[in-house]
Image 1 (cartoon, helix red, strand yellow):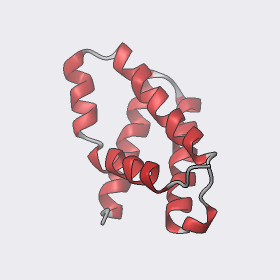
Image 2 (cartoon, helix red, strand yellow):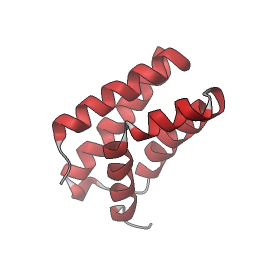
Image 3 (tube, rainbow, N blue to C red):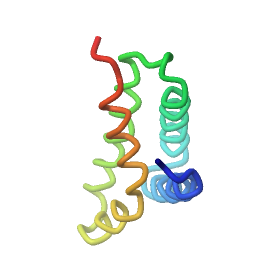
Image 4 (tube, rainbow, N blue to C red):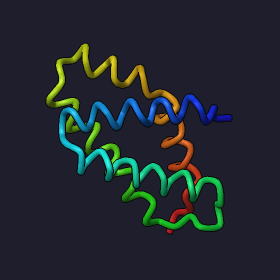
Length: 98
C-alpha cells in the first residue's frame, strides 16, 4: 500500500527539482501525468494503453535531469522518490496490453 502523504511529499519534491532544472511548464506536465496515473489507478476500469505515454513523459524528464545532474545529485533525487517509482512500476504492470 502506498502512503499518500509520503507520495504527496515526493511529488512536491520531484516537481520542485524539475521546476528548478527544466522549468515550470515541465513541472506542471509531470504533475498532470502523475494525477492521470493516480486517477486511473484508483479506478482501474479507466485504464487504457495511452497511460503508457504518461509514464514515458515522467521517465523522459527524469532521464533528462540525469544528464544535467552530477551523479550524486541524481542518486539523491532517485533516493527521495521511491514511492513514485514503485507506483509507476505498479501501474505499468496493471495497464492492459492492447
